[in-house]
Image 1 (cartoon, rainbow, N blue to C red):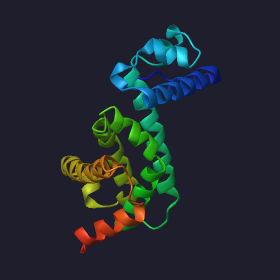
Image 2: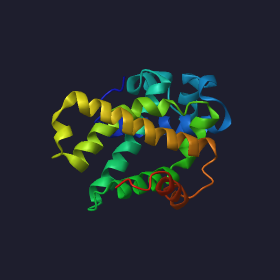
Image 3: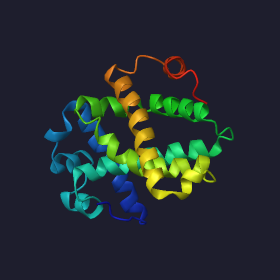
Image 4: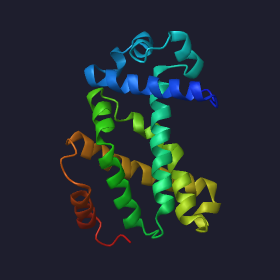
Length: 183
């Protein structure tokens, strides 16, 4: 669980702890990193860590939430709401953050992203298609979001597993080939 923070010093400490964890993940697998190591790398105490986070997983959850907020802001600025435009933005966004995906891959934690997706996709759907009848049927929406999140996440994971050596444009060409009739 993440603690709500408003104090500027606590917010700075949260950023330092996040940077420390990501830096440590460059050196070793996530499962082998201790909270003490994270705190020491951030030049903070374990006590400070526990004031901000409960677990080291919470650090990653917080970071992915920041990424998703960034993606939502990117989507919000886009006026073209077509699916292909949204998917293109999605691939461009993750290409810019491929280092983070590489760290997750290295730690065998790419599936960690699935839990985060289930919270993100309904927000994206409401933003893009809030007036669609599906938006007013909670059960149908949950299945539609599971389908969409699963598909896009699987493509992202495959791309990450392959080292993200293809550009977002190349991935879009593959998507257009696989789904030629998709809007």
